[in-house]
Image: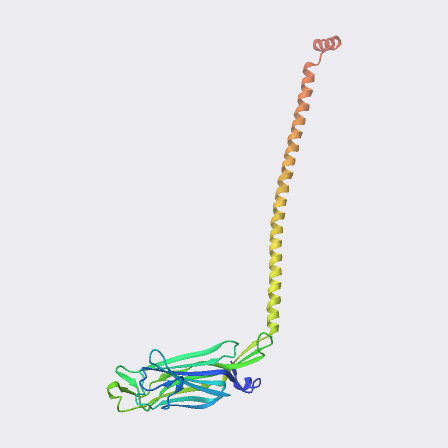
Length: 287
């Protein structure tokens, strides 16, 4: 959010491509219009709305509701704007009143819209000189882009409730012949602050580069983990192989030692003695 003084440095006027104000009178008893042309007893007065053109339409829907629509093209809200709807037909009354405000937002292909309603008391209808009032805040919005995907600059409005709507004059249904008037006042308050949205290519590039770097380091981390696992398995296998070789060598040495000992012992046992040796042994024994 920024003050309009700051945003006005970038834009001369906040306009919206299309601003629609739709007022629906449910259970309307008078003449509404034919072929979208408003009845001559329906009057619309607009204050502080500046546009390249305006259109007005009135029609009855399948629920016998009178729909009064005002459209402002390339519309700018100057200070506090208002739309006053006055119907002076003989049976100008309604059991419910709805107001829907729709505007292009500064965000490409996005709109801002809000709808509110009022209900008459039991056994009564809205009728009389006191208008039912609806209140909305119109916040200017600015969109700026460095990308060719969007326009370099767009303006619009963000719509929100200013406060709850207020009921106007009501009367019992049995007293309808006494009065013949229905009024609706719609207030559009322009906010002193505005919304600003910027789409910068630098930010997109930074995000892209960061994503690539993150992916590369992620791949390196995965490869390192795999190599560490393979290296561990290789060392473990080599260790077992060395232990097996040492065991075989140990067994071989033990076997050779056993064979040598066995051979030496046998030679002493079976070696034949000649007569000289025998005599020497005997003489040795006599001594």
